[in-house]
Image 1 (cartoon, rainbow, N blue to C red):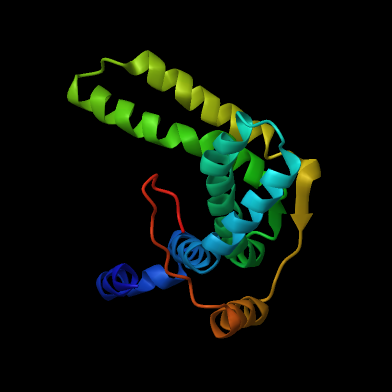
Image 2: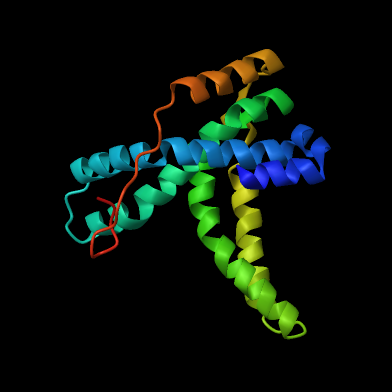
Length: 179
């Protein structure tokens, strides 16, 4: 919240920029719904996956990543439908493939910058992967096309803020899992 206030004090026009709206609506939905979504995904994962080797990997890595992706997507959907009139139904899958590459790309980018261009080939490969994911999962057949009026978008966020339960407070056990 403080970041948004400072940002708007410096550049009040940012309120009307899509990037600002995406950032803060995604973070809002992650804060409000992440824990509930990840708990439900973990329960579903436990019911579906019986393999004792795969189950912990899904609970520890896949479910949290998918939860963040779904919450962020839910948060930006009204804004995307208002500004662009379409929504890719495959974006959660694309995020599962693209998000894990963000940190290596960032690290390699800093390394390449600091080393006068060394490390360019791995960076090229990872960026080619992101480009492939973007082109593959932006398929025209998997789009929801609908323009939302501004009043509907404002009503959606107002209802979420009014009725969304307060985010729970969790502690971590000795393994680093939420309890």
